[in-house]
Length: 289
Image 1 (cartoon, rainbow, N blue to C red):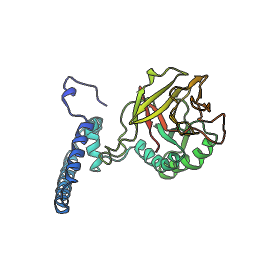
Image 2: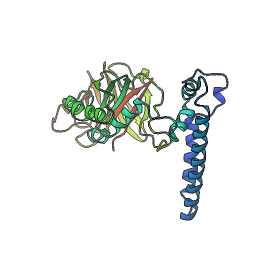
Image 3: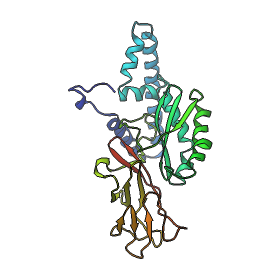
Image 4: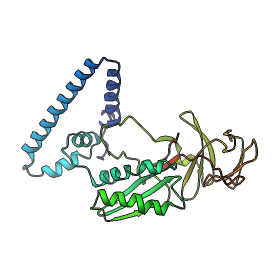
């Protein structure tokens, strides 16, 4: 992104602008079918007008000296980038295409309480990190090579090297990756639980997130997140004893390893995991129903 200026604070953010569009769409949900159809037709006509205007503008300016560099610099602004991407003026970046390929295998990962994120895409190399239950899972290597790596190389042939990254999630960045401008933008799946700095290494905390109680534990290389419910009778374990990252249920004494969710008392059951990642300075959780 471009460096901040004194006027940046007065500029509406992409989140704000899309929020206004979403509010208008929700308002139209109460209209009858004819009114909704008219609203959609008007929106499509405005879209078509803007798209044609942008294309004519690009066509008129493309041969001007320095135009390419100027457009690239302008596209570093998140609003400019999102709108130009929406209208097809800019092509998807390599990062976005890798992200789209990862989306195709996410449902399978989510069915096991896990997820994955793109850490970096540089040249012909992509680094992917497993999150939640997939992180540290004994079968993760098979999942990586049979699913994730194959999906990326099939859909993005320019990427010839796909590596599995280790360590805390988040990719070391708190910037938004514009994988699909405007589309389903308001349907946020990741919820900020708390700042990473609030959870010390080896510490466990019980946190309320969107009316769900979860258990967060930070380890040297990852953060784990589980539903705060004993696998025995689904009772909350907030008052349970925690020693050496082993949680003992205060109700019937069932003991759980907070790195894996494994029940040490009855190995046939385990805690329900939620997807978790560290993005920038925050721990984010995706609740699994």
